[in-house]
Length: 356
Image (cartoon, rainbow, N blue to C red; front, side, top):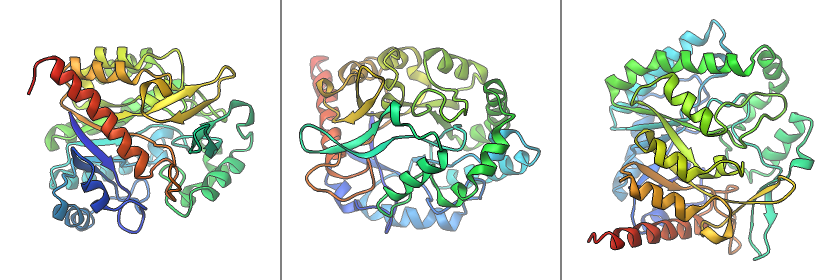
C-alpha cells in the first residue's frame, strides 16, 4: 500500500508540503491543476510547475485528483468528441511525468453535496454533515451556501465559473436519464482506453457522493451492483475504481469491505473515510477510528491487506480540530491522525502475518 495526501497547491491550501513531509509514511501527493476548467488541456509547462514544487520534498506525483470530465461528455452532446480529444492530450502530457492514476467522477453538475460544512460534534470538533430533511430544494441556494462556506478556497465540483450557469446546466441535463448517463460514460471510457494503455495510466472513477439521486439528477455508482456493472461494462484493467469508503458508506446497505475483496485488482486508488449514520438518514463525517463511525474501517483495512493491495491510498475528509482554519474537510491535523490510524492497522496486520 502506498500512502498519499491530497494537496491543493501553493497559495490554495492551508497545509504546506513541509507539513505533509512530517507525516510518517507519506510518499506521494495527490494533486491537480485547480485553476483549469473541465475540458481544457493540461499543458506540459503547467504540470512541470507542480513537479518542481514537489521534487524538493521527495514526493511522487503518481495520482491526479481530478481531471474533470466536461458536461458535454456527460450529456452526450455532439461537441463531446473534441473534449474527449482534449482529455487524451492531457493524459499524454501527464504520462510524461510518470502519472499512473487519474481519479475522476461522472456526477452531473455537482461532485458532492453536504448541508453543513462545519457541523459541531460532541468532542468539540466540527465536520461535514448531510441532513436529509434540510437538503435545499433550490440547487442555486445550495451552491451559494457551499461557496460561502468554502473559506475562500477552491472547492472541486463547485467552481463559480460553472455554477454561474446553473440553470442552463439543469436544462441541458433534462433529457439525460440514468440509462443515457450510463451510455455516455461507456462512450467516454471506450474512447480513451487506447490512450490509457498507450500512457500506462489507470482511470479510477469515484463513486457518487451521496450515493442517491439529488435535485432530480441521476447518480450511477451508488452500490455494489452498480460497481459490478461499471467494471463489466468496460472490462479493461485500465478501467478502475477510486473506492471511497465514505461515499459508499453513506448508504448503510453498502459493505465496503466486501467490495474491496471482490474487486481489489480493479481498485487503483483508495479513499478511506469514516461516517456515522443517524436513524433519519442523516450522516456525519467523523474521525477515522473504527468505533467512531459505521463504515467498518478495520474490516476495510483488513480486506485491503488480505488481498495484498499495492495501490494508492489516502485519508479522506477529516474533522476540523484544534481551531484549525482550513478548506472544509481538508485540514492537516485530523487527516494526519487518520494516516497514523491507518498505518497502525496496516502495521499490526503485517506483524500478525510475521512480516518484518
